[in-house]
Amino acid sequence: MVCYPPPLPPGSLCFFAAYTPGGALPDYTKFYLRNLLECGLTLHVCFSGTEHITADSLTFCTENRIQTYTRPNKGLDFGAWCYLRNHIPTHNVPFIVLANDSVFGPFAPLLPLLQKFKASQKPAWGLVASRAVTPHLQSWFVGLSQQAWQAPAVKRIFHLPFENMSRSEIIWHGELGLSVALTDSGFTPDALWSDLRAPLARFFPANPAHARWRSFLRSGLVPFIKQELLRDNPYHIPALSDWRREILPGNGFNPAWIDAYLAGTPPRTTRTRSNRKGRLLYTMLSEADRYRPRF
Image (cartoon, rainbow, N blue to C red; front, side):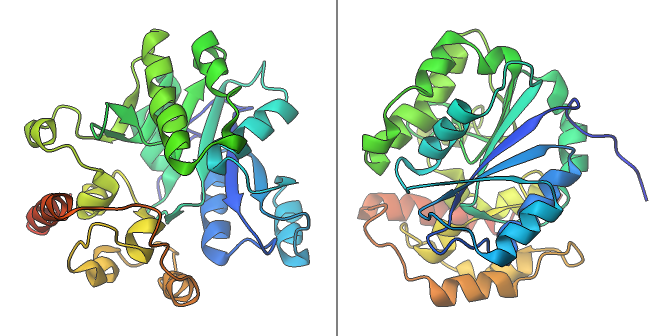
C-alpha cells in the first residue's frame, strides 16, 4: 500500500455545505466527509434547513472532530459558505476547500488524487472546469489558497446577498462569478478534468457533469456522480441505469445508498428546464462517451 502525505498544508480547512432538513447526515455524506478527513482537512459542516442535529450525526461529527453549524436553508451552498466565512477566522489558513453534498462519491480515494494533482502548488483549482455559459470551475468542489481567498474580488463574491437570490441568480453570481473574480485577480483556475480546450466543447458547450458523466468516472479524475443527474435527469440522458457498472468495486462506497436516496427523493422537475435541442445535444455527447475507454 502506498502512503501519501496530505495533499494540502497543515491547517487547511474544508467548508462543507449540507442540506439536512431533518438534521441528519446520510451515510453517503458521512463517507464523503471521511474521505475529506483523510486528506488532512479540518472540517466545518453547515447543516442547512434545520435548527437541530440528530444524535447520530452529532456523535459522528464529535468523534471525527468535525465542527457543526445550523442555519436556515437560504442561499444554497454559497449561502452556507458565506455563513461559515463570516463565523470562522481564516486569515492564517493555507487553503480553503469549498464542497457540498450535491454529489455521490467519491468512488476512489481523494487523497492520492489531490496529491498527484499537486493541489498545494496551485492557487485556485477545482475538480471540474467547464465551458458551459462561460469558462468556470464547477463550485461543488473548489480549493483556494489564502492569497486567492483574500483577493478583493473574491471577497466581494462572499459578501453578496445569496440568501435573497434564486437558484439561477446564485449560479450566475456565485459559481460563474467566482471564476470570473479569480481570473480578474490574476489567478488562472486549474482543474483535474477540463473541457476548456476541447474542440467539441467550443462549439457545443454543455454541463459535463451531465453530458460527460461517464468520462468523469472512466478518467479516474472525478470519482463522483451528481445527484441531480440521477434524480432529475433534466436532459433525458439515456442509459443512466448503467451507473452501477461504471463504479469500480472495492472503493468502500455502497451503491445501496444511492438506491435508497432515489427511492425516497422525488425528482425536482422545476430545477433545470431543457428544450428539444438541448436534450438532443446532451444525448449525442453522452452516447459518444459510452465508447470511451476507461483510464
